[in-house]
Image (cartoon, rainbow, N blue to C red; front, side, top):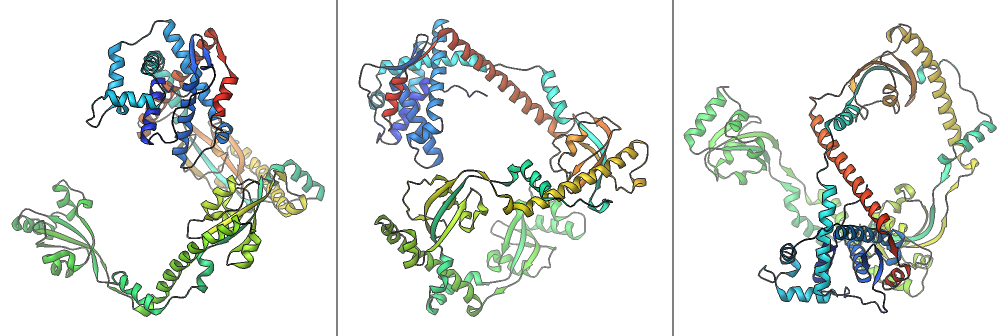
Amino acid sequence: MAEKKTSIGKIFVYGLMALLFVGLGGFGATNFSGNVSNIGSVGDAEIGVQEYYRALRNQIAAIEAQNGQPLTFQQAQEQGVTSQVLAQMVVNAALEDEATKIGISVGDDRLAEEIVNTQAFQGADGQFSRQAYEYALDNAGLSEREFEEGLRADSASTILQGSVLAGIKLPDTYVDTLIGFAGERRAFTWAAYGPENLTTGLPVPTEEQLTAWYEENLSQYTRPETKLITYVWLTPEMILDTVEVDEDSLRAAYAEREAEFNMPERRLVERLVYGDAATAQAALDRVSSGEVTFEDLVAERDLTLSDTDMGDVTQGDLGAAADTVFAADVGTVVGPADSDLGPALFRVNAVLPEQSTSFEDAMPDLRDALALDRARRVIEGQAQGFDDDLAAGATLEELADTSDLQLGKIGWTGNDGDGEIAAYDGFREAAAQATAEDYPTVAQLGDGGIFAMRLEEIMEPAPLPFEDVRDNVATAFENDARTKALVEQAELKATELSEGKTFEALSLTPNTEEGLTRNAFGAELAPGVLDAVFDMEPGDVRAVPGTDGAVVLRLDDILEADSEDESAEMLANLFGDQAASDVSQDLFRALSADIQQRAGVSIDQQAINAVHANFQ
């Protein structure tokens, strides 16, 4: 689906705002030498060199801001950014050319309004500033005439684009058809036919059969692209045994966390405050007599239980109400008692007993926590030294021989299960970007650990040798043979069902589904069951492969979409909006293609190359 057009004027404005936000550092306007001022045209609408440069620069900056990391121009080209920007510029120029030919334009008042309301052109008082306007355009390398002409042309193009994109409304029949298809249901009965029902033995495969199976299912036994990586790493846990923690530090940590180790009795309490004690007492009497519950009192005040929840509180948290609340049994409502908000009723929901942990009992946890923290600091202090050694020419193997760093090798495919270190985001990101030209550098793992890596080789996808996966092949062959045998037996049962026998008479345990849709999210059915029942007519019986055997199906009824279902309106809105958007985008894409074909598109590749050279 085509993306909506980004307006030329807004590109200029957003670019200017970006320049202002970064203090113009590194984003100064670039003037291209020579007499070439355009990279191409659509009809009479030209695509300026500077315009293309700014659009491309802004798109790269936007991607960098989104990803939080630099994007080289080579990476931008590989990701198709340059092609996308050029395609968008061509579409913009096509709309501009068409708007000019059919006489669409905007007046000076509309143009002035857009300029005055642009934040980049406002002063400290929030009002339009002529000085700010001139300063921003000058630093962006734009004259007032150039900018205003671009903005005027863009506004005209936007009017043309809006006439296509807006106002598309599909007939109700179209939406109803979509809802009818998505919401149509099937009522059916099914029974599992598992391995315990197998009445025949399974064939013992020959080597030729296993080899044939292996070749027919080669994709299951193909190694993905694999990066062979040598690495060193060091985590706090690796050096815990070498970190000493003295008793004074442990006692200081215990004192700092004493409130955590020694907690007084607490209670989970709800509080309902009243304006005066008499009203609160009357409410308590109604609860005591059984006339109402605490929930009823809360509802009478137009409150919810969450509004009354105090969480877990200590006696010190309750002030004058402490004795009353802490003498109450769980589940009882007591009061009235004074609170900082006035007379209140309290309900006790649970009692959390006092917790007391001595220094001796807390010492193992304290020691682990302190040792881990100190291990992190040790590693942090060593990291720069390791990096300096690598920069001076030391190898990973040499560092592992002379330090606590541990050496390892991994065949990285992009899966967490490739190895213990592959579970770290930092390692995976580095491995994904690693090239043979990279020099090992120290990087963070995220838990206080560090690593450095060296890419040895990139192994292209290739089938694993049959000898290495023979056992897996044999298991898969056996499972497939078992499933086929069970399906054959289940088909005989299906035939008997179609002849009038019941599930029970065939020793099958029936399960009934009253009405499932095509997606039936959460339905505990074997893959393929829903596809099968939506391909059947009422009364049809079929056997299909199941998760661990076969499934016997009988379609009982076809049910229309439930118009009263709460999701029906949501589906109607979703389908209606999506379909209208799809159609409008298709129309816009067709208009753009038609304009380009009629007007003619000319692209100067040498001019584009000159622009790209400024990014190298």
